[in-house]
Image (cartoon, rainbow, N blue to C red; front, top):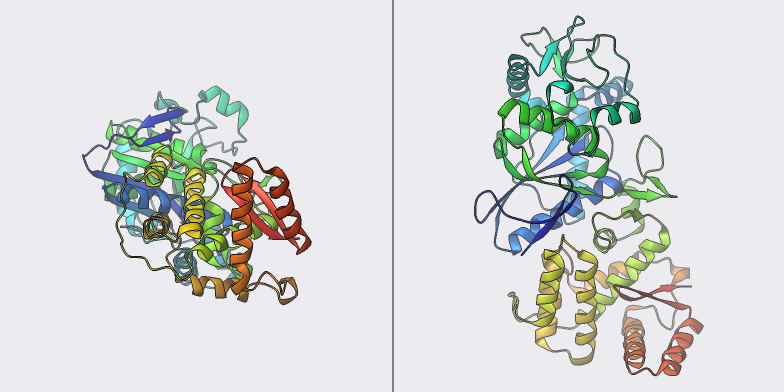
Length: 467
C-alpha cells in the first residue's frame, strides 16, 4: 500500500486515487530565461521517479509539467539581449529538453506553455471577480483578495496574520491588503500584452498553474508537486485561486522535494551559487548525476560537493561492474522475491529511494558471488524502474574512464579490468564483518588504502573513492 507524505496534512497518507487505476499529477516546471541548474534537475528527476514508480505499480499516469514562458525575468532578459521573448524562451526550452533527456527524464504527457492559455486565465480571473474573490484596482491591475478565502494558509500551516508578520510583502498602495497578490498586470512600456475586459495587460505568475492544471487534469486531481520553495506563496496562491473558482478541492496530495544546498545555503540563481546542469555534465556522467539525486530521500536536503559526486560515481560504477559480462534473460520482476519485495516496500514508503538503492547494492553483492540469472535480472530490472542501469556496462565503464583525469587513475587498480578487484575485496570485507572477523576486515581496508582507495560505509552500502 503506497504512502505519500502530504504537505497539506503534514503526515504520510495512504494513496487513494480519485479514479481507480489512474493517477493525475501536475508539477510546476521551468521559467525559461536561462539554463537549468542542479536544483531544477532534482525536481525533475524526483517527479520522473515518482511517475515511473506509479506506472510500475500498474497505474495509468497523466503527468503534466508546465512551462512559464512569460514572466518579469523573461521580459528583462530578452530586453537585455535585444531579442524577442519567443526566440529567448524557445532557445532555453530546447536546452532544457536536451538536458532532461540526458538525465533520463521521460517527457510528461503534456507540457503546456503559459502563453497558450491566456484565454483560460482571463476566464478564471473573471470568475473570481464575479464571486467576490478578486477586484480591479485603480491602476488597472487585478488582485486576488486573500481575506475572501477562509482557508488561506492551510498549505503553509500559518494564519494570515502569521504570514503577514513573517513575509516581506511588496508595498502596493493599490492593494486592499498587503497580502493580496496580482492576477492581471496592466500593460507597461516595452512589455507584451493581451486584450482583456480590464484593458491590455498580461497574467500574473500564480494564475498560470491554476489554469493549466485545470485544462489538462480537471478541477480536482490527485497530486500536485514541486520544489519546497514553491510551497509558499506559489502553491498557497494556486489553492486559493482554484478552490475559490471551482468550489472544490484542487489536489488531494501535495508533494515538495527538498533543496539542493551549497555551503548550507539553498542553490538558486538569485544567490548566485548555482551550477547549471551543463556545467555539472562536463565533469560527471549524466547517470551519475541522476544516481546522486536518487540516493537521497526526495524530501531531505541534498548537499552539493565534488566529493559527494565522486562517491556517487564510484557507487554507480560498482553496480555496473557487477553486471559486466552478464546476460539479462528476462525483463519481468518476481515481486515475491525477498529483494524485490524489499524494494517495493521501500518505494511504497513515500518513495524511499535510499533504501531502494541499498537493495541494488545487496543484489550486486549477490551477482559478484554467484552470477545467478535471478540476481542479475533483478538488479537490472529494478534499476530500470528508477531510470538506472539501462546501458551496456562496458559503455558505462568506458565513460567512467573518459571522465577520470589521467593523473587520478591508479594504474594498478582503477582501470576497467581491475575494478572487479576493488569490488571483490569490498565483498570480502563485508563477509568478514558479518562473520565478526574484524581483523580481516581492517586488513582489507588497509590494503585498499595503501593503493589509494578509501572506503566509506553508508546506509546504502560501502562506497570507495580515490584518496
